[in-house]
Length: 162
Image (cartoon, rainbow, N blue to C red):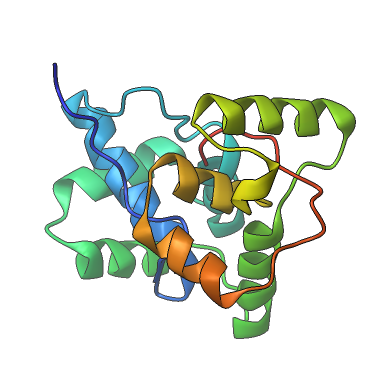
């Protein structure tokens, strides 16, 4: 059985954009046939980032797989993206970080997924990014939660895996 390879954390940034390193990893894993079970390009955070950048998903995938490293990919992104101010990028980033279920159906789905990956309302998972981190068992999730007070127990979000 092949071990699942996780893309980088959605919290990581490149060129000021949250989730961009993860999208690069997902584009590469997809081409390798190793993106098992992940939403990619047309859903979730990938779709939101590509839309914010104004970049076609297939073109991004080609760049991510033909360019040598993150810096080269960032340079490509910068030459193809829509222009945004630093404050617009910061606001967009924060919106992504803060996303949580916004209706009963999404909340029920979020709770179901959290339960499937071994969590519950006591786990401190409150946002979609938290859910991704928890599911992928990142130490950073636990360290971040130790530094923050727990939320109001509103529980998990909705959209599975960025």
